[in-house]
Image 1 (cartoon, rainbow, N blue to C red):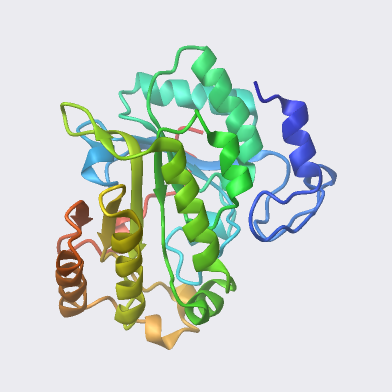
Image 2: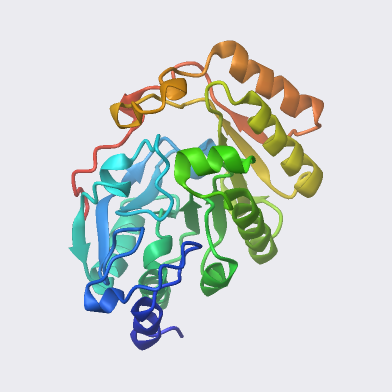
Length: 305
């Protein structure tokens, strides 16, 4: 069992994420993620806008954690990733939140951008399991993760839901100040697949175990998207599901990037869907018209916290 002393040691010189800031979060220092030594959560509620095999009829039990180590300039959840909206809570309260979501009928527990709190989250998950929680656990991530940190989750996470955002270093440098993004995310996804194996579904079509890799197509960056699709097809075949997302929405905080001040066109997206089919990708989710709308961004109003 992972205990709070071990968690504290990892926060004392924090290298949980690939930024490896080395700050002492116990002493109040803050690195790129902007977070201290206490879990901060902005929303915990049933969420119906994940892939169908995750939301199901009753909704995914999504816990939205505040802060982020990647900081994409176009982030749709910027109120919490950069603005740090939310409330500080104890690991005991986090454990209770998991139980409350299960009691509300959640299909799973969905940890949204939890990597910078991972030692504390691991402790809360262990406590929830010890108290009888039986729901699958989803680790919902931007993909920019250290393999060593992900290994803390082995045996606790059933479903990994990482992004694979960028292939070219020029893009990840411009939009996230992370020139190493693809190399790091590719290694992280390989570790995720190692831990949970090929996708497994129950009789209702709900995913019980496996990896879904999300790719958010950006306007004007079709070639980068095609590189990512080729990589996934060649590296994983049917070992992962693809979720090809068209929902990019231009928001005011990305105003400094004029090329991102429009939505994806129907032709751009359909071209990527066709290309995925040409590559032989059949295990995939695609989005219909109307997915690109700020109304789909949940309110980070401390509900359920």
